[in-house]
Image 1 (cartoon, helix red, strand yellow):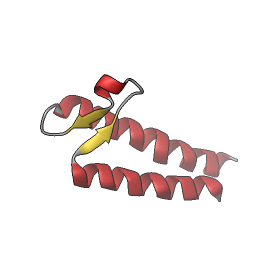
Image 2 (cartoon, rainbow, N blue to C red):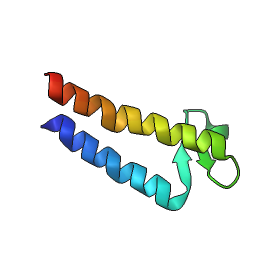
Image 3 (cartoon, rainbow, N blue to C red):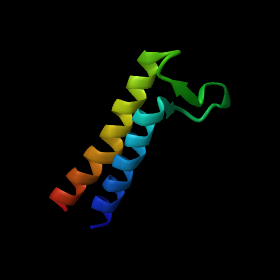
Image 4 (cartoon, one colour):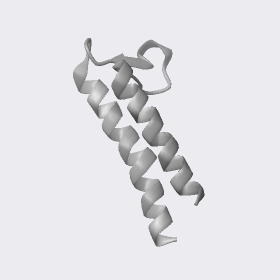
Length: 65
């Protein structure tokens, strides 16, 4: 159940990232926020990575546990 709550929270965060056009990428302060207009490649990479980690893994763990 907790994994599905985490996945729902990730859907909310990804929705906000898509709505605002800014995504969080990495831990370094110089490239932490990626904007869709300035650098679309890293932005869509961050969205894909967040989708896999935030939605895909929790659903797989919920199914197979």
